[in-house]
Length: 181
Image 1 (cartoon, rainbow, N blue to C red):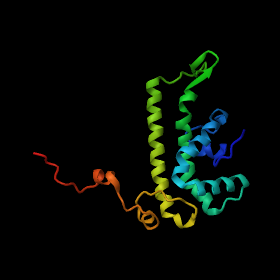
Image 2: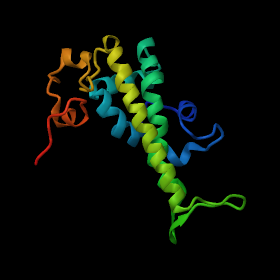
Image 3: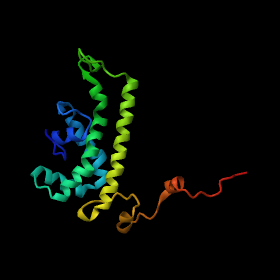
Image 4: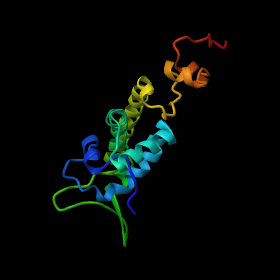
């Protein structure tokens, strides 16, 4: 079953670390997973469904097309690579889980794989932060966008996000006297 996804092979290769000649067949299942795990919580169900419908019917508005290219595809490219990495490094076969390798290449060690995975995770986080900022700045163009609740001026106008929570006191520059002597 082919799932309706926001990104196709061409755009996935453009916004991910995969080379242009990579066969994306083995990572197709991770596209929808990445959308549901990273994009849906960011933009909300209504805007996500609108984008899916417009991509499927090839009727993207200029604003939504820009949102895909500026905010959503960069997240998807790296989140698909992050989610797919363990099973592109190793394969499940009839004899069990085996490392992928070929005659002219050497597979990564587990330590190397962990380093690559940490890097991809950090890249996804940076791209999510950028997307939140970009979407908040351009929220007037996306009436179905479920604001991210990041606490910026735009979110505060439309949501009850004035409660800064416990994390604000941790990261703020103003600190109370914590000398407990």
